[in-house]
Amino acid sequence: MCGIVAYIGHREAYPILIKGLSRLEYRGYDSAGVALINGSLNIYKKKGKVADLENETAGKNVSGKLGMGHTRWATHGEPNDANSHPHLSQSGDVAIIHNGIIENYATLKEELGNRGHEFKSDTDTEVLVHLIEDVQQNTGCELEEAVRLALHEVVGAYAIVIISKNDPAKLIGARKGSPLVVGIGDGEYFMASDASPIIEYTKNVTYLNDGEMAFIKNGELTVKTIDNVVQTPYIQTLEMNLEAIEKGGYEHFMLKEIHEQPKSIYDSLRGRFNPQTGSFAMRSLKEYEGKIKNLNRIIIVGCGTSWHAGLVGEYLFEEISRIPVEVEYASEFRYRNPVVGEDDLVIAISQSGETADTLAAIELAKEKGATIFGLCNVVGSSIPRASHAGAYTHAGPEIGVASTKAFTAQVSILTLLAFGFAELRGKATKQDLRNAFAELESMPAKVEKTLQCEEKVKQLAEWIKDANNVLYLGRGYGFPVALEGALKLKEISYIHAEGYPAAEMKHGPIALIDENMPVIVVATKNSIYEKVISNIQEVKARKGKIIAIVTEGDDKVKKMADHVIEVPETSEFLVPLIATIPLQLLSYYVAVSRGCNVDQPRNLAKSVTVE
Ligand code: F6R
Image 1 (cartoon, rainbow, N blue to C red):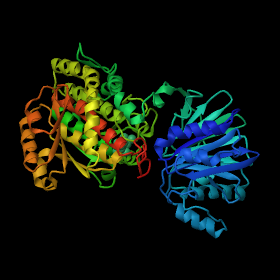
Image 2 (cartoon, rainbow, N blue to C red; image 1 turned 90 degrees about the vertical axis):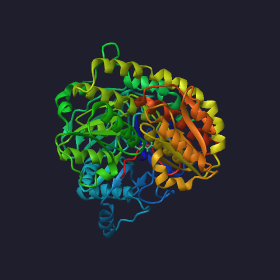
Image 3 (tube, rainbow, N blue to C red; image 1 turned 90 degrees about the horizontal axis):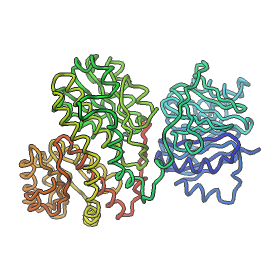
Image 4 (cartoon, protein in one colour; image 1 turned 120 degrees about the vertical axis):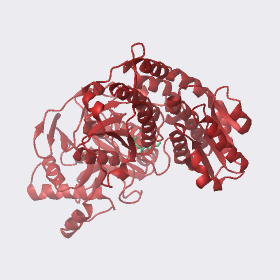
């Protein structure tokens, strides 16, 4: 949540900050603000989007070669101008931007209030900048030291950047629990929540570790822990390119990302298996061979769409590798004292790699002795760092708030892992692997073909767009697909939708069905196809209107359903990779035709770094 970007160097900071904020807007869009130093410290901030901030600054003095910007997803204090970042210290000389939550802010605020501090906002962040100035005034130390000392008094999560009118050659950042990356250019430095605002200028970056701070002072970068131990920063060169974070001719990032799936699935699998020999090339499988052979259970943790991928994982690991699996919402797992032990493998799934609940679930499982495998998309993010082993999904930057290509990449790797584990545990032969890999290898082409349903889906969207409720049904591998379809629709079009196991419908939700209820059924050919057909009949008997996702050439369902969307035939365990695509497109076109902001749905943010 919240995006932060900062610059110090030889260029004008404002255009870099505004462009950076637009790229980070997926992290939150309740308000935006910038602070610039050019003799004086100028702050502009506004409730609303980055575009509103640009209107606010039109014709004003935005010069300065040191500056920082923030886009907010509100936690403490409603979204309004006063609660927008940057926030100022008591004297107005020091400014801060912050991503995260200062949990003990109320106590700190009271103490500072007793010492005469006055606050202009309801935020936890303002308290921190007051504290920093208070420490500096009381100790007479340098600003970076005051930041370090103040952070010792703070409980919570943060990525912060600080600048001061009195230190125009200094940029200070720190992180604990929220990401912060430092970009190292030629005589210039950047700080940001992710690399997207930076890569246009430099590909050399260092990701701060938890509990580290970085400061640029007179053109030199220093990284140290908040316990004052100087660190040698690990500087890496990013491979990300600019096109990956731009819309490339599509109207929305979500549509671009849906269309990228043939490539992102290919990229997620590339070089990880050989269909001719049936062999794997995944380092983590090799390293943890002994563990995988003997493990007792897999626990999959994640949130939202990643949790849905986890459900697909459960079906895959149980069916293919014959390992018992539990899939847990990370937010529940972390607080319910689960039984976890050394023989358990916890697979943590997260696109962003920063989801606070998933991170906390990992920490808990680690304390209990489990081995953690992180399955994440964002390279260098917190979850891979907190995991013992893992794999990146390599889906490329996902910017639309609704997750699409990350889901199919997660499912692709889970499929691969299920076969890898199966082989290690003697549950799959080389021939099984060769067959499965050949099918997996054909997925990008099949997804490409599935995308041809776009025009048809567009028409159906016109019909769905006026519905108040939509039911999504599926069985077996179709069930997580139904859940994911329903989540996509509700989050971007604000139509209430429920995903349900088709056979469970008769235990309650069938009461909802009447002639106004669109029911979307995943009815591809599989081992329980006939059972799904019976469920379709049950809906028809109650006058429900059916859109069915069917295997191409299917005549049976076509006769019963009001509309069908055909998808290519594939093995049952690969259905989620195919059947999810029309549902993503459907929610996209419904949202567009309802005039919703597809890439930035209300109340949401891409990366949920607060619990
Ligand atoms: C839905 C969506 C969210 C995320 C969830 C977890 O489209 O994007 O439900 O899946 O917030 O995020 P990650 O995967 O980053 O942990």
